[in-house]
Length: 233
Image (cartoon, rainbow, N blue to C red; front, side, top):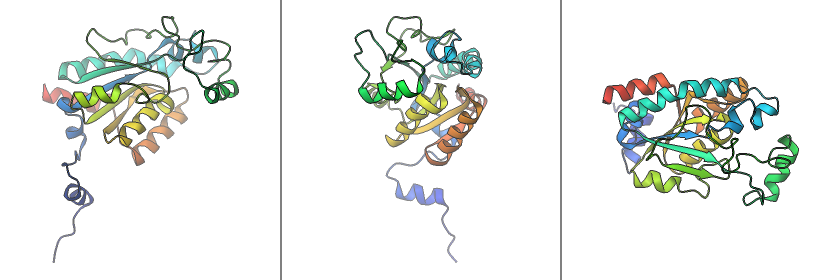
């Protein structure tokens, strides 16, 4: 009697390229990029946009203390590290559409309308704490939640033969999650890092990761991924 194929065996037979069927294969440094998303004062500092609005930035601040160690582990393993930052508002409003501004007026407590968010050259738009790019790191500037939208991120990843993106930063349920979903839509393996991302309520963080793990990619931890990278040094 023939043995029934597993789902992974069927996937391998159908796919034109052999699937990466476990985390160890997915995060191999030669084809992995670490995305560090929106670690900027407006989203993390107590005096930034989110902190001033009364939302809880403590998880984001804790992340900023811990993330440098994970970034350092990626560098030691030879993983491509890509920093992604927002530039949303300027005095003349180069970037924000009417639909964006209407949504902001309803939900952002004056952000994007009465005062700018992550304006170029401002303290608010600067990186928070020690999470900063090093010379030679690609830095992608975006004007929407999705880091692929009208940026050169996809070009950078394809040019470096990247198959997997490991996503860190803020906010789990906004820019990180939106970028992670888009990565999957563009046929990258996407791995969101539970303790490498943060948002402004634990419920939103957990719900985002749960949904992502079911439909878009894999959820892991800094410890699990770092251990894989150490084994490849």
